[in-house]
Image (cartoon, rainbow, N blue to C red; front, side):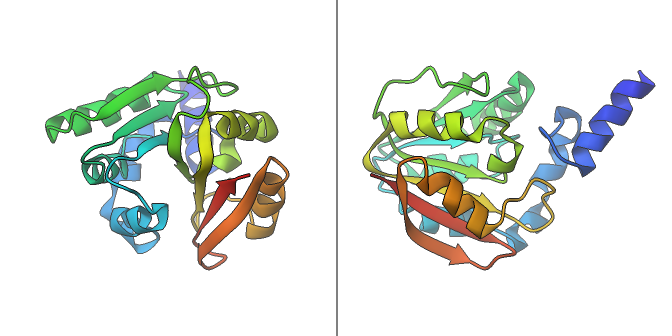
Length: 194
């Protein structure tokens, strides 16, 4: 038991998949200093009928806001941890939002149709992914032509990638940079599927 708690604590303060036990910390409103849901919605360039995939939503800090912006569209949450999806679902259901679907994934592939999303986004997730090239290949497959992959990285995340490393990685996977928001401390880069 002690060893398990030590491993969870190490993942909380260090690199790796964020532990469910500490999910509540991802809901602290101080996160708005780094990236607010409103700012993220603007950066995603959403249409009200967009079909959007959020990878690694955790307990759903951004998810309810994104779903509400999709008045004619849909949000799909994909996570490796069923506990995180359950946590997000509880928060979303409590708000009466019903245009959200949930997908437990394996960290390698997405059981989703080709070219089915207008937007795919992740916030402080890409650094945790072990097989980044495979993941990006899957995202390329499920994103519609001219669709946007939006990746946000924030200060304080131990898995944070630099702007340069992220651009090199993503552009190597069949995307081109569309827009960079923020600074090297807190940024969002939108890439277009080519």
